[in-house]
Image (cartoon, rainbow, N blue to C red; front, side, top):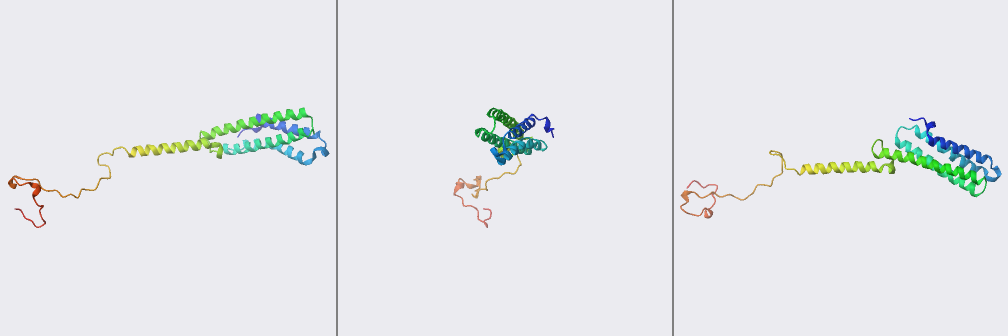
Length: 200
């Protein structure tokens, strides 16, 4: 577990939250109302809060989930501040500088998520759903490779004495070869010996 206060992505999130509160302190309550104020400040606080909570998780899967929450909150905050900018509730340049910081924060969060994706892909941690599909491909390819090896080994000739399926014995009756006592008769014309026939 890392000290989240040392993370640049968390520090930038705190700066964004401070600036959001400062901007709304300059906006009269009658102008913007409480709803958009509460929504914007909640989204701003949610960014560093989710980063801090994600750093406390041991698995990369859990960390990824909280960074995903932080990224979603950053997009929500960005939309709220764009509304404030369009309605001219605050200085446009101040809002623009804040929006640039929010975009930088989104890039930093995305970089963390990509790093977690890479660790999942090489199998260091359990994958996080659609984000670790590479690991699933590795497992599938490994399984297919083993199956091919087993198939190839089954097609190799078996050692002598090893069990193998053989064709059923022929039911064709064999006839005796001619001997010198046949007096020139063809042995093919001889009748097969009966069950009660004796020696001639």
